[in-house]
Image (cartoon, rainbow, N blue to C red; front, side, top):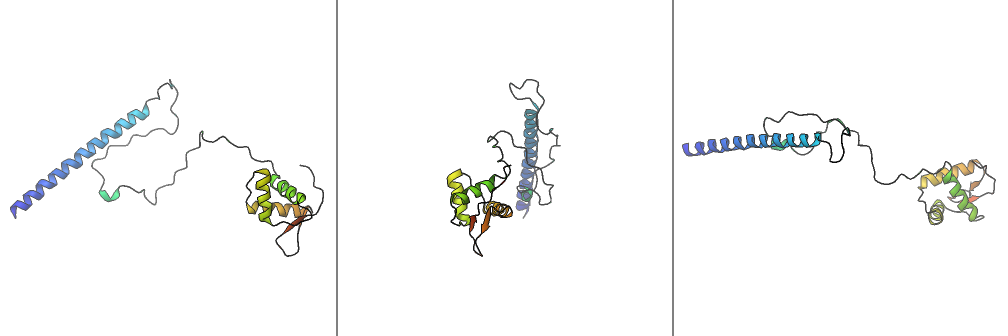
Length: 169
């Protein structure tokens, strides 16, 4: 019995020494990271550091319990995403009314035949190289109907060009 308690005490002392050594090593590593982050980049000269200012956190007294590592807290405050820098070149937005113009051109080129929105979409994709959502096509058809440039055929889901002139924007 005395032998097992001595072994248990020795094991607890070893674990305590390991935790302390880990905490000291972790603190030293984090200090090295903070020092490295505080230095300007090579070739940057005396430029001011970009981004958020660094904060100095106190070194942990002991390692965190095993169950607390890993996933962030559910009630943690959300952080804003970092602004995008670089990456893809910005594509200019199409001019206002472009979708309606595309839909009108497709209906006009297929007049007097009526087209379903899926046919309109594939024609725009084929002719213009633009992928348009069905909701955008439906909205454009509603705009064309309001200015009497297109009409829905009966209770069907097909649309045809009516030939009304549209004002140039």
